[in-house]
Image 1: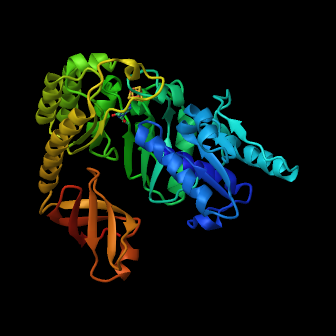
Image 2: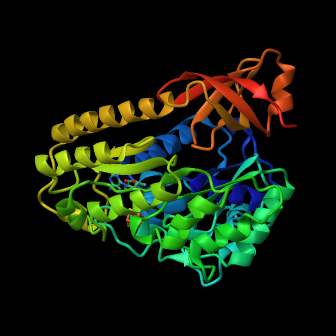
Image 3: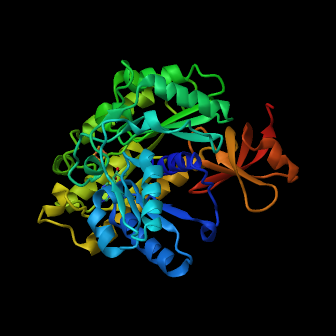
Length: 432
Ligand code: 5AD
Ligand code: SF4
């Protein structure tokens, strides 16, 4: 979602005559928009700010955006007093005004900081300029915020309460993206399957999106197990544009720990959802998030997580050491798990997940897979894209001109190599 928000900030600044640059030394304005969900991501902000302050003359205007700005306004002012603008995730449509305020204060000779971390009544989506597709594969935020309050998570505090964009606004944005040449859309939300902008929920929205001409592939992320309703599960078996990939975080396989995490579901509930999705879409690629070392995690809890992974068989997954986040209930629990135990457990868990990922990819050897090519490689002739199951697929074309021919299109690839994080293959036939 930060990537999506960054592109929208770019859109809004373009209206004021700004253009984006890939060379930071050309920039008059630098916007840093990092994630706040784990400590590591937030810490990166301060090292990046330090580097900017050290290396760049003349000094650009610096804005810090997103959840970090929302949560750490005072910390930013203390650790990086030269930051000009602090703007939260729900008010970045006002960025041009904040920039103008700084310009005005500079003219007056008293450069001040502009801060806007409101949760305004108006929706930024109604005020932002029309979106512009940057790639054949586009992100589209349909929902934001969270009402679930998992013990470890900052999202309900930084992104605010659950909010869904109205269905018409989403359809309009999707049509614009397809008109710009995109053919895949990934619907975004912290609780995307709690989408309530359509009377029939996320499934209703996906059905409407599937009617849009040129929209070949639909994905959504991130879902909560409790919101995987019957309609959404059925959609996986019925809507051909809905890709066979589901990212469904569980965090832990232990009911005791799920309770401590306030996840509002059991391991059994999760397995039932997986079974129902597999009933309608047996080949679905499953992905998840795991937190290792949440306060109170015992050896037995951890074993149960491993057991759940064995039972499900994941195509890929993300796993993190628990990191205490300010203001969350888990950060105040006394039974914190020692760092060395977290490290050992994480390694065991990741070895198992990596093995499953390799096994999943190996199944595709020899198969023909439709790949949507959205990236060119560094060397001539190299092109890459995604399979329906979300695997990265790399191809070395025989001639470098072929790259331009296939770029932005879906082309069948015969898989000849399977690795943990990617597949390789040769172009089979072109349906151009
Ligand atoms: N520590 C570690 N991982 C976390 N996540 C969220 N909060 C924390 C935390 N405090 C992980 C969860 C979530 C993913 C986006 O980030 O697994 O699903
Ligand atoms: Fe955070 Fe997701 Fe839990 Fe909401 S459901 S509190 S976003 S982990």
